[in-house]
Image (tube, rainbow, N blue to C red; front, top):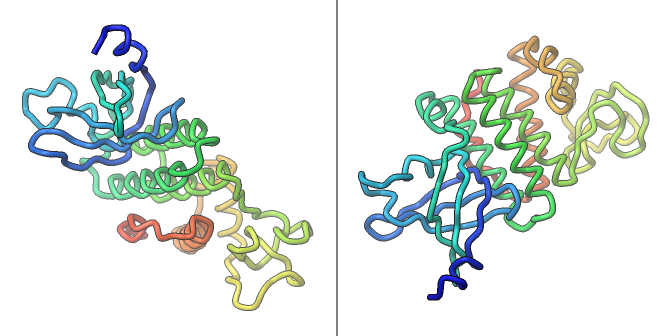
Length: 250
């Protein structure tokens, strides 16, 4: 391979590691969400050896500045410089770990086919992982805020203050995932959940980033809101986010 051809195939990007799996005796395939190139799957050679210089920088939930070389089927990671060592503090705490796993799984699903919003999804996920690693808020609140914002970026922003179907100003006492959120009495389909107004207020806070309002919420409303968020996200993804089942709701 000529030096020129190698150079033209080499590129750099910031990336967050979504997941990894073993390849051969010493390598790994890394699923990445990059800032500028969308979701990628790349080979990291030799990272499972104890002598590897950048194996620890390519663990799940780590953020790194990567150099990659384009390959025939999978790109190859040749350099990794840590930018956000969130994986260590997250992995030491079970509640944080399962929340991070649910966020990473959701990000992978949302960016698997949608490359147009991947840069925004990258920034959102990195911010959520940073907040989770430093314990800025309760892990379950960070998760639900992330999920609501992630589906909003993808084009499925939920409504909590006006009827999602007719636009009638709220507050409203029913929620329907298929219609897009809060629904008024006239638009409410049979069987729609009727959450407490405090729960709807909490979800609105999580979507808008009103952390003072979210942190002051009661546990009962957090649990009720979590069910609505999980149902809403999985309805629009049209698949189950398996990691959500591991998240413990106090």
